[in-house]
Image (cartoon, rainbow, N blue to C red):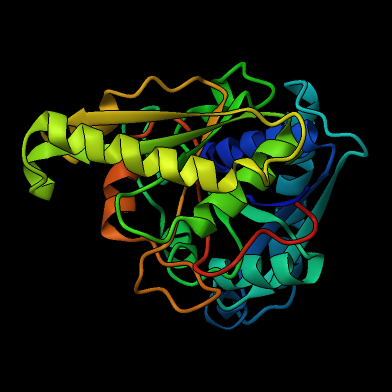
Length: 296
């Protein structure tokens, strides 16, 4: 699996680096660490004297070298090592998407913004732009993930709603589980008071029926060695339902894009946004009507 990490010389950047290294190493794939400098800085920040651009580039190259050193120091090595890239673009998101296209990446990894609760998400400007325009899956690393001792991925959880249209999530989740050597879990979250589904038992029964139907539909397509099970979590609110789930420290959660997303594009919907705020583990958001590329 070819993984592109959007790196910055910050804690969030190292969270993304840790997750990217984990995914690349677990899949026996490639890790590409990309640092994007805004091209507008050349015009708006450069002083009259020459040399500012060279100074900025040198600083960025030192940050990328620091990323390599961090991987080695924390034993986050990837077979074949990590490849670093320095790019100029109009925005961080644009630069990362260009790199993902050129490298035929399976996914792009970014970290949470500063200011969030430890172990939870607060979406940065770059991540927000990616989550509303990307053509490839985007993985979000929660704050402080860099401190986690987890080395692999034991389980991929596909978040399946009660509405039709789980194919994007299932396709991406199956391929991820296969590439990472992980178990597959289908998760349905039921918010009793928010979805008007009647009693708690009736809502849970509907959710169980739905995830069982989805599992039956994909069972014959599961690769050899990928085991799958289901879970229905319920709560008075969506947030309570998420909190009720037992997530492993080395788990990934996969969610789909909003129905508002254009075909082949990613758009983070309201439900996934609420889930994001409560998750203690990395989340992967997949584009609508698209499956992960051949490099996955």
